[in-house]
Length: 376
Image (cartoon, rainbow, N blue to C red; front, side, top):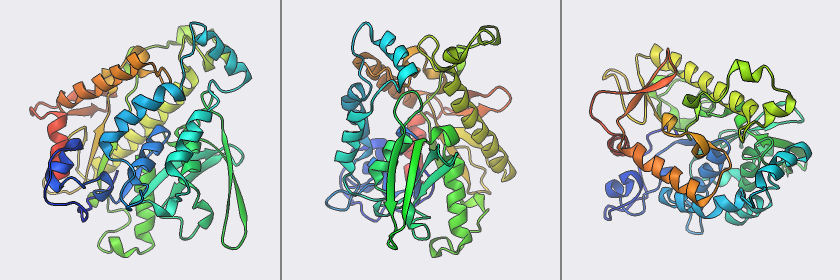
């Protein structure tokens, strides 16, 4: 999420709400009021749509606090854990098709988002996908809709596409028609194969928009990243588990690379590598600006305005808690506990030599950092 929009819609009274935005700006405050652009890949793309799609009152369809109960209710139905033999069935299904048919997820998304299209979101959004026919990323960006009307797809189609993780959910096909009558075909899968962390993609979209002379950014140059305020929210990883080794991988065949002990090594490798490369490039950009990157907190040089705040469970998850699709009630509740504990943890910074998060000795908790982010 990028920007520093002022909340023009919030009332002055009222308390309560996620990360204290409502305490600061009233009961009507929503995340879409605070950011110039919100980006998301895979499940993050769905969250992006939920936070920015308009309801009947032209306010965001979901408040941030409603995201957790949404996943607790629907997660087990999206990824059903059917029986003691479900693991065997899932392994077998990998050979024949995706582990899940996606029908419940598709109905759910279409029911929630209806006929809402990309141009109707309440703030700008960027959602990466990957076209397996063209073998290139397709970026659904609010900034491009005016010049590329073929990208003005239904939000439901965009969300289904970016969440279509290979081996887990089926690829998604749909068409759009331009005012001229020209039809464009899309053959899409999870955007995570190209941009698991969409931070750089979002920054690039903003830069291109500035370059085209948008009046909203008249005082900002396209590469003036010193003016960017970035909050990056991750889903964590099992990186510290050291699940794989060269000795074991040397014996793997095609199937073992796809499914191994309940994990998906090939997908894990691509996702982690892509995310790490984004972190590497962000480090270069922000280091050049003499700004520092912190994880779930702030570390801002006084003479600069730019900062990137990264929220990620990181080393706090392991085992089934880090699984993509173990959506049992017990596991979902553990994920909630991880998030609640993470709020109390100290702000961390990435050690670029080890790739690990290290606490900053300033006594600031993640929860306090989030409150500061909404009041700055």
